[in-house]
Image (cartoon, rainbow over all chains, first blue to last red; front, side, top):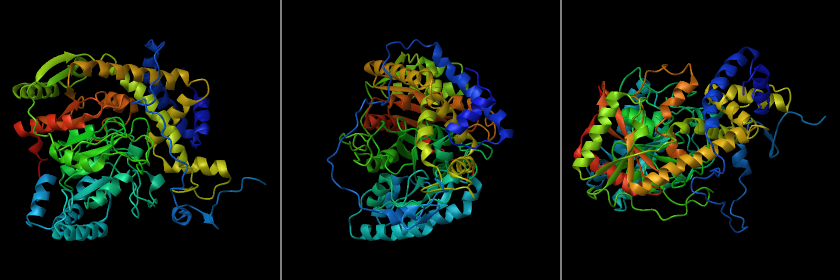
Length: 95
Length: 483
């Protein structure tokens, strides 16, 4: 599955990372060699092998629907880049 | 004082030989005098440390001291610590003052230990050399042009340079064991879920686990006693009773069955290191252990499987860094998308970006089955190899790394070459098993690590097996030249 420059641009867009045009070739080279490495997997027959997503095959724990956390908005917003009246500010989304 | 273990410091504190304030002051002075050589700390917290030391001395004075009371340690800068910058080695979090404590930090605070500061690391724990830190590379005390390993390279270098008696680390693919091997220390990656990850900045959630980095297996056991345990705040935390990891350290090893996987002694292994590991195995035979050759046939596949699973999970975990709620935000964004894209371009370093891109690709439409699902199936095969092997033997041993500490810059041009360094450590995280690295020899003046792998929740046994080796040998007592 060979990648080209457009693939790199598309992946970077999906990942919401800006990549300068001059850097695309380097990413292309790196990603290609990483994908070549992982392509070793395709040689292995894994038919009927159950995928392992949790090493102990644990399931999600449930808890009672009780309020356990207090509101810490002010404290948590102290580290935010921009806030106003308790809201996180971002560039205008709707005209 | 700086060569003392936690066990020795605790004895001295109890006997009134010195106070926690004295130890802490001495370490803080040493850090400010010497860390410019190693760059092992990102943030030193002298005020907090002295405040905690005073409180600890009061606890000792009142006769209520536990073993960690008044003992200074360093924490990897991946654990949120309230009121202190928690950077994860990234520009993205350079301005992030954690608003709460990780459970691990809470536990050490509750044990009245003293926090010296936060240690350097590969950005978001992605790396095997500590060269991927926004705060610059860490220097291995064993050689000024050598890497200390990664990603917990700052923690390892700090302990090896005697700038902390011990430190915490995290291990997603070897990030505790490999730095320990490269700096002559003893560390354990516990079973997946044994130590709470609440407040530990996430890299790959199905692999991440925290553990101690120490001078001896005994110290690692003391630290794990503080760290281990169920935490309702961590949905992956194991709800199982915790042993006293120091209780059976001295249990004799007669009859212990050790498996040596032939795949761990292949041509990739530096032959001089192989000799040292074999010599350690002979030592275990002298202690009464029986040796059996075993096979973990899918070992080589751990690299491709890991380098899909870890980046895929990282690409998802790191999507939270978007410049909205905390961390870096780019200047003058044109619109929301521009803000996301430039924030992430500026905030992440090259290796983190590479892994996010690989992970994003692996999870993208049309490729999920070929990459992520395939890697999870291979993960099952790797786990099955271990389950089969551990039916026949009590522990598995081999080298921790294929070679001793390499030179700074030697492997930075090709990410894949760096990934090959993790060949002996990755499979353990994929299987979720516990593993240790302890010193077992020297090659060309550089330390060699022996890896010891056990069954799920067999940390007590591993620490016992490591401790008995350290009762019979002196490798762990070697300190870096010039200390």
